[in-house]
Structure formats: structure tokens, C-alpha cells
Amino acid sequence: MTPTAEGRLRAAGLRVTAGRIRVLERLAEAPHSDADTVHRMVTAAGGHLTLQAVHNVLTDLTEAGLVRRIEPARSPARYETRIGDNHHHVVCTRCGAVTDIDCVVGHAPCLMPSETGGYAIQTAEVTFWGLCPECRTSPIT
Amino acid sequence: MTPTAEGRLRAAGLRVTAGRIRVLERLAEAPHSDADTVHRMVTAAGGHLTLQAVHNVLTDLTEAGLVRRIEPARSPARYETRIGDNHHHVVCTRCGAVTDIDCVVGHAPCLMPSETGGYAIQTAEVTFWGLCPECRTSPIT
DNA sequence: TCGCTTTTTTGAATCAATCAAATAAAGAGG
DNA sequence: CCTCTTTATTTGATTGATTCAAAAAAGCGA
Image 1 (cartoon, each protein chain N blue to C red):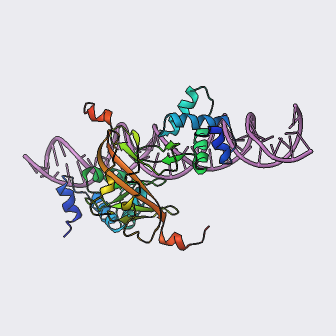
Image 2: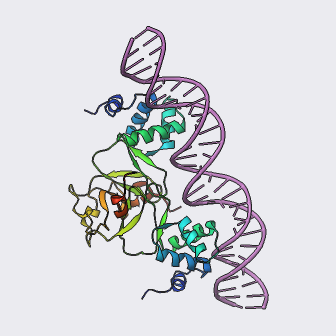
Image 3: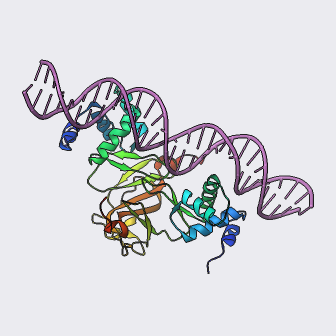
């Protein structure tokens, strides 16, 4: 089973604070949230943490490998707790909604470029762009 | 042969201005430049255009389909004149340099996700991350 | 519990980009 | 070629997301 937020923090060698636990918990409920959304969720759940502290916590958790930061174009940075499986994302071109996409083909043959331009490739990131179900059916405002 | 900057502007139904021509020319020489770099290149080449106008021009050219905007994480928006071939990019995780990567396999089989989450997919964007040749060999500051 | 270290708060600053009003330039029609 | 209308550019201010810095508060090993 999934370890608790506290357990994950300890395992990562981070101090266990109320703020970090709350951020991890909210993010698990609402993946792909940006810092401001996390802040509002933490506040709504009765927590007290400034927006700056939320940025700070998210940066610490990202560096510790407990959350992953994604930065789609034209959107503030978003965060998710699903890590370690290099899945991808589809982003709505109209409303910006983000949804997980499982790795396209178990092993990803075409994610090894033929010519790397001399780079030592570390990761491949795939982002799909399209219309989300809601925006597909809503009137073209 | 490639049409002139002026020709491309006319073909796109845009007014031909000195600023737009200069931006297109500089961008052809130095692809993947950000707005500030374009501005400095235009100025260095004897052109006179404010940074705001450069942003304006880049936005207009992007909307007209004459340039493509790429927004790698932790970097201001970058622009390129190579369009129409959906190629990809490799970004240096240390210095942020960007290099073109030709489309991985002519036809991209694994760029059609099995589960689209109900989205109407429009495009797939692939970004590779790694160390550029310079950063591979430079000391680990 | 004490004391050192790390975190959070508080308040300001940065960076990239956008907005709005005034001025200047493009180019179609005469 | 000149004028008029439309579209660009300048000028100056503003926004949004994030980061920085110093002071106050909290975690946790001894």
C-alpha cells in the first residue's frame, strides 16, 4: 500500500511539517494543480500556509523527488504526486485542463531520437494537445 | 528556394514592415531565440524596435503561422522559423540550449496514445532533456 | 528540555509578458 | 503622387507567477 505523507517525507530525509503533509494530501486528491490552487485547497481544508510557503514546499518536494513538476505552455507550473512511471499528459488547448496519459507503448521505441545532436539524453517528455471532453461539446464562445 | 521574408509576410496577409522583416531574418540566423535575444539581435543589426514591439511581432508571426513558439520549462518562450514539419527539440538541462531533433520515426506510431482520456488530440509535442555537448565536457561548477 | 537547524512568515523584488493610449507607418483608392 | 483608413509601433504602466531576504517559529537530535 502507499505509505503515508509523513512516511514519504521521512523516507526522503525531509522534516515532517504540517504544511508539507497538507500539500502532499491535497495534491494527491487533485493532481495537476498549480501553486495557487494548492494554496487555496490547503486553506479550504483548514490549514494555514502562505502562498510563498506553498511554492517553497512544492520546490522542496520536487527536488526530493516526491512530486513532479510539469510546465505546459501558457500555464503556471503544475504538480502531481504520481511519480516514477514517466507517464505523459494531454493538455486542453482551450481550458488548460491536464490529464494523465499512460506511456504510449510499454517500451518507447520512437522516444530514442536517431540523431541526438551530441546531447546526452536523460529523459523524453511527451505532451499531447487537444480538446478536453467538456470543451469538445461546449459552444464555441 | 525559400521565399524572402517580405514574400512570406505578404503570403500570410500581413503588412510588410521593417520590424517584421528584421525579426524574421534574425530568427532564421539564430533559431530558438527568446524575445529579448531577438530584440538585442535586431538592435545590433542596426534596427530600431522596442522590446514590446518584438513581443508583438513574434505573437503576430506565430498567429500567422510564420514562426513557431516553443516554451520549455524554466525558460522564456523561444521562437523558430522552421515550421510545417513538426520536428522536436532537445533542451540542455544545465544551460537551456535548444537543438532541433528530426521527427523520431518518419511516421510516429507511438505518438498516438492508446487512451486519450476523451480528448480530441490535435498535436503531439516531444521534448528531450539532456546535457548539451558543451555542458557534457565542462567542469561541474 | 535545550539548542541548533530548517521552515514559515512577512514584505519586497524580479522576470517575462501584456495592456492601453498616443503616435507613426503601410498601402489601397483616387 | 497624395490622402485616408487601417494597422504597427512607441511609450509607459500593469499583471501574474515566482523568487529573494530577513526575522520569527517550529522540528528534532542530544
